[in-house]
Image (cartoon, rainbow, N blue to C red; front, side, top):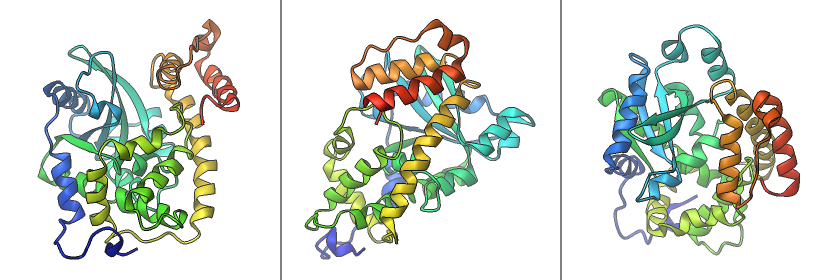
Length: 302
């Protein structure tokens, strides 16, 4: 993959880590920063960084929305001590927890610094992390400058990873760099259980094509086209959808009302009117495992 596909070669483009660091440092609603600090305060001595990401990043009004954060910790033992949470986070990362602060609702996922670095790179077993951090995000809290630099380095791996896997799958794109991004996001959406309507993946790029052209030019100098990409994507689809089910079932032990949240998210993105039955709340793991395959077969979740 060469930079010539992405720029005219006449101008000096900023490096990807420089672009990532600048984007991560862009200001956010003060309530988002306050919530991030409050999340970090729940893990004294273990919290290293808190990142804000997702669709709410593009919203001017936050009331009534579910904000998305990643909490990066030094280790799971430092975060939880011994016990189920540390074991579950290591075995099936990440753990996901609900949070509320100053009238806003959120959920946050927990990863260790080592896992966050790995899951943003091509060695990751699923697309879950690098697909999200190839998109805009904000570093809204850091324990110190070393933690900030470590988070920037991890996020800077995401875009080259996505482009490296997407480029072999975009033959016939005519050299259009945005087509590579769109194809990459289309493939990542197909590699998870998603409630969003068809075409949502393409709108990610369309919301800020200049950003993706700029990041693509920088990331292309680091991206390496993945060998056997079609086989890797088939593996991502199989494992990613299975892991989505496993993570949701696990979340019923960490996320009170997990089945209700699932229904809310599906209704919001897919325009459905899903109603959770009382027995599904009483046995949330069974409820989630019976609910999701049915929605998948109906095409509500893709």
